[in-house]
Length: 73
Image (cartoon, rainbow, N blue to C red; front, side):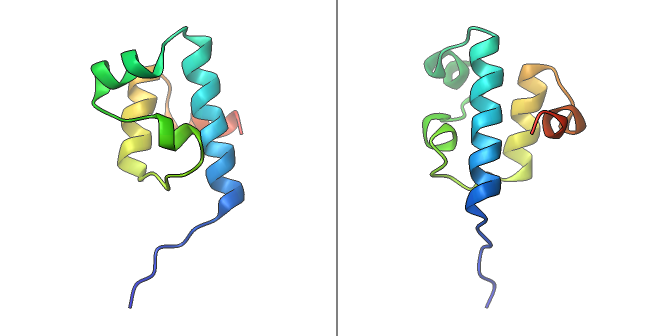
């Protein structure tokens, strides 16, 4: 059976980085949802283990690369 791996420390770091990027751009959670169709609240709260595809979509939205995203962690 394939169990989903969960690393709480990594999830927290990623969620905090996403929140920092959103707030730095002055974008509300609602605006981000309207623009991307991604519910960000659970992600930012560290309650969702997001996929690489979702993270990539967020990086595109914030106009940064995945490499740049992880440099900030």
